[in-house]
Length: 417
Image (cartoon, rainbow, N blue to C red):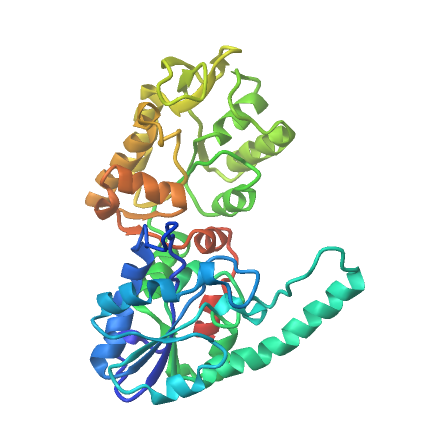
């Protein structure tokens, strides 16, 4: 497989798929440029080598073409400043042949939002009230026209680089299908994508033991496949966050008004049984910081996790549990953290998640590989100033979760094929 590190882009036109789906305020100012900064090393490498750069991305979920609210023209000036070039703009990504052909070495062109075209996702935009037959016909039509759309995008360049891990789980025109138009020596991962792939392999394939996964979040239902896949790989599985109370109630405990999925109690028991059968140490909280209301300033009273009074809810793990979780984490060699163990947005209930983060940082310092992923976990390490004290913080979101579930990501497979 071709590597971006030793590839010379001189004299080449290079199509780079990035993830510039960044948040904008009401005046279209960028409020978080993390994704842009993440792609800069790849984009700058192309320009520094003397390549002609074609940048492609989506933004939001537009429902028409064009859609001013989601135009990438809003970020063109900012991206150009970061790259140190006068970034050109193609107002129609499917009709940019002349603009791409005119690019000279060291110049850069930003294509308009790829998702202005339904062909990018392969999903038709349907009006209300359409019949099943009409839906079927529309899907077939978009799939057919998607081929021409993909071929057009590919025609702009000599080389394809995918640096958009956040969309790697989508078999879209620009994230997977386009790779078929480039031979093995002319398609590759960008620097950011390559880091993500290596990080995932470190926790899912090249495992150093003990391997501990910390799974937080509010619902067991949203993490079922992830937990089942992890039970095949981990030595320790820490369950935190709102999921805790579904497990505790299933075991017969009293959880007060804590969040709980009553229809998943049997599933929780099945997962506990499966963990035992596979020799996985499944850890639940022992004590819980509770509140009478879901309030940032609520009075904290600590109870045993299975003895929470009827009028109170659990919002964070207690000190005993912090110590229990931390001891396991600090003894680990591979660590995956997806989801906080409490309502970390409230400072009074952030102690548990901070304790987990500090334990991961300590284990990392001692040589463990630690991967943090999922929006809330990333927000945690950023809030506590720990992002540079773990091995890798994933930008992937949904792509990372699907990788942890054991699914093949189309955007990765298209390059590795």
